[in-house]
Image 1 (tube, rainbow, N blue to C red):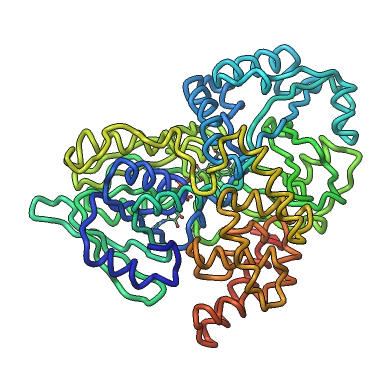
Image 2 (image 1 turned 90 degrees about the horizontal axis):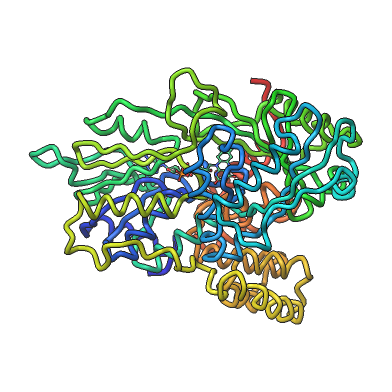
Length: 548
Ligand code: FAD
């Protein structure tokens, strides 16, 4: 079945009429990873997402596949080792969507890490994460730091360490994992909100009720096992179950802001100290520089998040302290995003002290919850969950494989011969795309967006009779026919990332994009007006900040 909302009726009918080995609630990276692991072991899998895929935390992160260097300060050695090693696996399986990024850690007199500590921490990081020789840390002098970032604070600067992390597009990573799960047979639906559970006489779950938000109809999916992977909403889901459990989440909000490179001409990613002894990232990407994150407890509505003026002020101060030669103001912020970390509550701890470890909670109803964790560790979290299903919840005969199959499995778009093969793949496609009159920037972006799906994506340009540039048209058509977009904002935010990193392009082409989608999906005028309003609100939300 093709992964498209043009076939939505078929997908819902399958969900309503068949019985599944597991139903996963939540279409972020955690749910996507579990769907892929379970489907590749032979299980019959359904996944339901209440909004768009990755619309929760999985499109609102710092967009790094990283081991979490700073967790070394909290002695979370095992966690850092596992996440650090996992980076290489995520990279190998999808090198188009994950890119090595050399990170500079400058050290100043009185800062978090001095020369010795930086050296020790980075060496430990390399060893724990089993970093390959070519990517191991290098210590550099003060002059070399200034050479890399000419506008960095020189007062008290002692030198720096350079180590490798991986930059990703979190929403596209989630999408690529989700598409692979669908390719392996999982039945997956977005805009499908779980509203309750059905039970048998022994009070074990035997069905999941969901609201099909596209047609406002309730549907029941049959299953004996539910995995609750709803991120910041896991507690809400657990409250729909009679066996609620004691542990709970503590949400922590994080904000990022985006500048044009003309305003913040950063060529080198930097991980730097803040005035209140935290650390934030400044990362160059696609002609922009983004900075984040904050870390504050949050008890508001996770579905209606806004960046606050005070959060922008905090990040502007951190930037001004570390890069005093730049003069950046609130008006220079082009776009922004806010997300919440689903952390496990720990009495008396500050947000940045709470562990990022994942935890699994099993309810007697056979609803299993997975919470916490990192984008980076999604595959290992999925392995742990499906191992548990094998041991305790799903009959063994339902499995084709007892053990995890995803370690060497390219995600969708990742069939490029691993990280080594990707260089050749990229070179070949750069030539082909430029021969088709795409600019160098467009070609680079198309390759990073689609990887090995690129030939399918660009095949659409032959039919472009719209005002949209071919590159944008190809992305739009591909997302409609192969990536389950339903609302225009799904495309602008999570299929392309343009709302965050190319907001001018969104404003320029939004009317044409909406027109194309309206025609293909046959929207009424009211629906078209509703979706247009949704886009306008999202633009406003990205560009402006609230007082409280
Ligand atoms: P989510 O992505 O939130 O997915 C849960 C999904 O469940 C949502 O899409 C939601 O709509 C859906 N849902 C909820 N209720 C229902 C329902 N009733 N029915 C159906 N669906 C439902 N990790 C890293 O590895 N690297 C980083 O650089 C990084 N930076 C971060 C920075 C910030 C500011 C934050 C907040 C997090 C960061 N993280 C990072 C952590 C990472 O983003 C999260 O661990 C990860 O995205 C969580 O994914 P998830 O699938 O568990 O949750």
